[in-house]
Image (cartoon, rainbow, N blue to C red):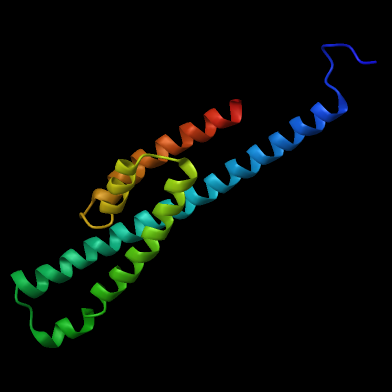
Length: 136
């Protein structure tokens, strides 16, 4: 017979399984965060390039011979934004944040410079949550 303070074999196995499951969830969240960070920077840079392209086209009225070399930028940003949205939803669902956080993260890829600001705040919050999950 075991003492009341010592865990039984079943309790020890359950505890080890719970720790392994927690570690798996933490690793998945960290992977999602890394993918989100990369896509936030790529999307932010492409959005700034798109703003420059639009200014060249509509504000400065640059010649069409030059503009034909940058016609790919809106398409590239569009597809990169789709990948960014996938990473946003992935991270959002793993972190179980509110819908308002999702909306702010989605808008980060549409408003110039916002993706950099949102990424910094999201990264800090996600790291804090992961660190808190490790101590539990």
